[in-house]
Image 1 (cartoon, rainbow, N blue to C red):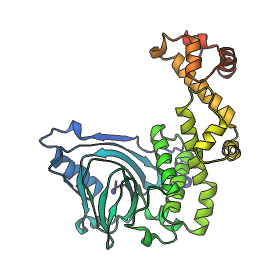
Image 2: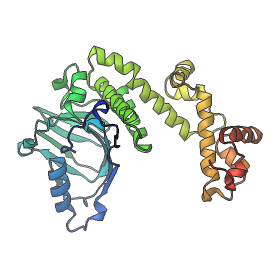
Image 3: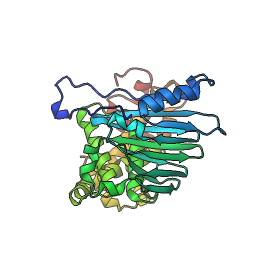
Image 4: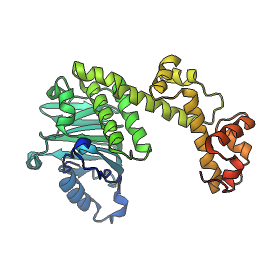
Length: 339
């Protein structure tokens, strides 16, 4: 990740813009066990990540995860790993990397960076400067979310970037919750298909990071109107998707789960040119369509599909489905539709 160079902005791209490289999934399961540590340590850890990795001898070594690149040299990595220690010593600083590294894990760990030696609690986050040595000890198996950002992308948004390095941020911080859920929603969805959408995601990530680690006044104001609202909307949409089967799902219920008023939640959707009700109906119809064209649900009756997607009234489901797709549910199931 540290070897990734900055990419030009969308305005500097040629008209034949090409998307970022696809997601990279990795697993040590594909490396022979006898060579696993040596290969991962040399190729991935030292050459690619530019730090040393020392596995815990009491645990079988494994790492599994996914990395996703974004424009401007931003990388997000989600992984699971056995216990190990990380050392970015001065020998590795010759790469000239002055980026910033965000790390969250679901386990306790200790960190040493810029003279700070701290115990980081489970669920807390920490920010490192890649231009300085760091040491992190992770004594138990863990899940982690890592973000690599160029300093120029985040640094100007922070009121005191140097003061943010090597100091844990509590898992209770609202901005951390929003950042993690926004990243998780990005992970679950396919990468954005246009440079504008990809760069907007990067802007939202930087907004949330700035608020988390201490934004300047101007950056905080921008984040309130952009990154924070986008993250809350994505969080709400994810909640809706997970509860589509509940016929009684309401705006009030969702708003209450997210500590919002129904009106403030409705405003998030209105800013996107839609409403809560329209979004909910569209998502339910989309799920029904996927079920109808899937062999997995061939044995389900149309009424079963409707109920599974939260439609309590089958007649209403049929009308809405035909209006949306230009075909009846039976037509779609029988392949008599182009949708």
